[in-house]
Amino acid sequence: MKNRRIFVLIFILLVCGAEARSAFKDTGWGARPAGMGGAYAAVSDDSNAVFYNPSGLALLNGFDSSYMYSDLYSGTDGLDMGQYFASAAYPVERIGSFGISWGRFSSADEYSEDTAVLSCARSLYDLLEMIYPEGTTYDILLGANIKYLQHGYVLDERTEDDPVFADGDSKSAVAYDLGIMSVVPLMNMDTVSVGLALNNINQPDVGLKSRDRVPAEVRVGASYKMLELGGARDVLAALDVSYRDSNNEKVLDNINIHCGTEAWFMKNLMGVRAGVNYNGFSSGLSVKKDISRYCLCLDYAFVWTFRIKDNSGSHRIALSFRYF
Image (cartoon, rainbow, N blue to C red; front, side):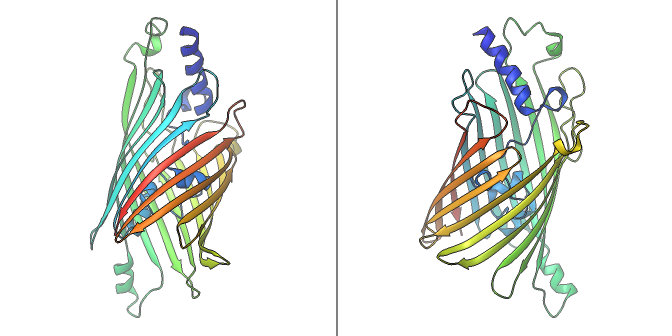
């Protein structure tokens, strides 16, 4: 048992990036974004937007909530790693959209990270109409997050005397995100969107003993949404480029490219997804049911990593509820 705990802690550091860059690594949130390989900066049209581009919350036209569980690296001996996510957002007419979210990464009783988020977003369409009295065909969205970050270790008799934990086994800090998105409708009812998200702008220190800053992250994305293609509807293709500002001297190791696609069938009852990035490939499936002004959606994503062997992939399942 003691050896297992040490092995798990070492494994967490290897998975999340060694030593001072270990905390709050982007392992992906939500089942729908994960199924698209994380290409979501220019999509972000639901409550998953909080962790990808908060400006997307301004696209909501009603209450939106999502609840996710993820079993990470399933089948790896001696590991029990998971993610939990809950988010809710609501648009207030003429003011903006507001959201509250909580995400947790944990490894059994060894290590955990918690992220609590308050979000706001607003469309600038009314301002654009004032600038262009004859009307405008595009929209610009702005969004921001305030995040409370906390991570901690569970100690035993072999680790509690380690000098790293002399001042405690946990640390918390506050971080800030900003996002912007532009949505441009085309003549054929298709839509082009571009998005930019700046995460952890202030790079807070969450080190237990020595400095351990949470790296700033930049994510740029573009998406193209077709209203109809063959027998499919709302066909989406998206591309993101993300950069994590770690101290790794190999700049290319800090960059990731995410590609993803989504399509809906059977009168928008079933959705399918596929995606890929430098860490692995993914696929996803959704079943959605509209009842009057309510919508209930069940999302599933399978993620296979290129970096870790001897596992059966990560599995994410999410339940979303919307009211229009």
